Image 1 (cartoon, rainbow, N blue to C red):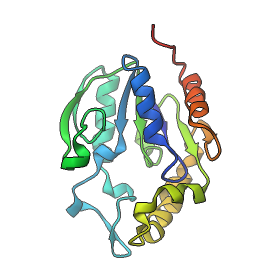
Image 2: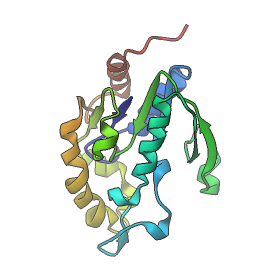
Image 3: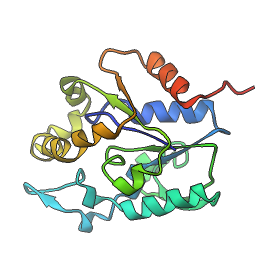
Image 4: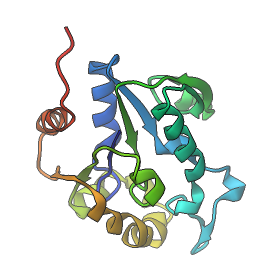
Amino acid sequence: MSEERGTFHGAGKSTLWTSLLNKYPNQIGLIQLDDYFKKKELIPQYNGFNNWDHPEALHLDQLYQDLLHFQQGKSVWIDTKNELLNPKFKETKKHISVEFSPKPIMLVEGYLVLHDSKIRKLFETSIWLDIDQTKSWERRTHFKKDGYLEKVMLPMNEKFVKPSKQYAEHIIDVTDMKKEIVFEQVENILGLEIPE
């Protein structure tokens, strides 16, 4: 099982994993941490905001159980917003229930999956996409308007995300790297073979 996380938001995680999923649909399954957010009314508060960047904003226990089921060869149903499986999400803002079946490689993508010790023990390897903070912030313009980026995202990144970098087996600095090169490096790490 593999996981990947940039030091900051905007490292290109979702783009990378979606590209891998498209190229290797029979070999790769993709689980995204975004599908495990709690309902808005259960999200913890910080500096006057809903704190979507705190571990308590996520159903990490449910993710752990789902990953155990995959290891046992069982399928699980997940309410997902994955753009490939739920192409109308941007219009409807509604998750749809989809059956996820285990694949030879199950990728787990998200900013806090290495934070949880139970979850990270399930991974065979982990990949951390590192990116310069300035470039990352440039990609997160929609968070700049209300101050969420400075008042919540940055302190949560310092408190929870950056410390989990120590648990990553592979660290790739993607700051000035073309996405094709990143893709190739990850293919090599995962030992993927071009489908016939």
